[in-house]
Figure 1: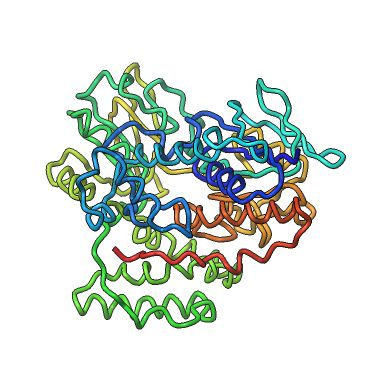
Figure 2: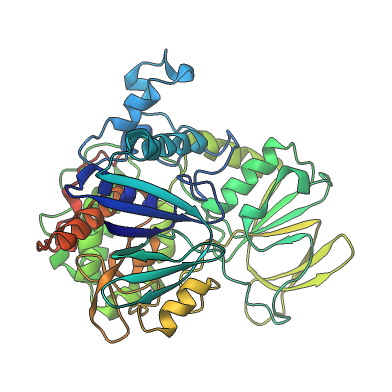
Length: 481
């Protein structure tokens, strides 16, 4: 029986498996290799805390691009939403743990719940360590488990852990320093009056802030960020038919930036939120990114990336209100600067924060806890995961031009160290950031999971697959909210 091994049991891996099971015509075995977090949930949806909400309204969270109301319909079957009108339910930002329930239900439905002799989904718990090409098939080595022989392998490992902080004293070793915010558990925090330093001010920081608030944390929470910028709230937008132009890929970075600035100015003059421009561009973003030269991509990352991320990755209005209330009361303090050093005490950490690289303007914060909320490490070349170290060593993958992930071809085939498209190794999700830029949210990932499944099945059946990168946005959803 043909076998597809999927490394990663979060959203990307789960939806790839589900689409393979839905579309396969011939007998197929699908093996989901899952590590660290509950199968089907991944890090994003494994939280059990009700205050951790989706950052996208329910109407845009269907797992299937051809069934845009699928998630909303499933929500309507739950007792807590049974009396909520659909028009209201569509606009809800529901707890992420509920979305995890949804993904696990899909996996059960297309796996154990609908197991047939034609297709079956097996799951293995363990860390994938290595992919070894053989004569006709590929061996996937999993720690503590029998080696899996597969015809195709999918890299769907999701976001890596945060990178180590670049501090003069090297790696921080202290029981009250959390190198990953996902190590945070209620039982660890036994000193609720201590101050907490959160390194970073993006979506990860928001999650930790919400958890501390739910625990009625009494100490001051400091969020240290180089820019001091916080995610913006979602809003109810308006139609903006004059943007973007019919073919924004022809403008180049400078032309597009000038056009966006002009429209933002006009929207401000009308009293409208200029973030509408980013929403309107969203269906074209991947193709625009691919049209940029390497130099334009580098310039974008240098000059526009921070503003783009703050505007693009927004949070529910209710969470933004909690954030601003905490800032107004002094419970949460945003400090613009960079971490320049840490010194350890017995139960406290001294954190040196500077506004420049000169180290002449240092401020010292004393914290009972320090949590790295800088977000996932982007470069895979220095990944802590043995899998990626071995893939690079074997020449099975190469970093992309900006070292934001790994290089892949238009059919999601990984490009190996020699520059050739792999016949057996595929990738999707955050590791394609250098190729697609927008590749972390459900509206992008559900398309990728479908296309990867179609490409693999076409390959197994000896058929040619189209250039998917050129056709990514067949998925039309309502972005402006």
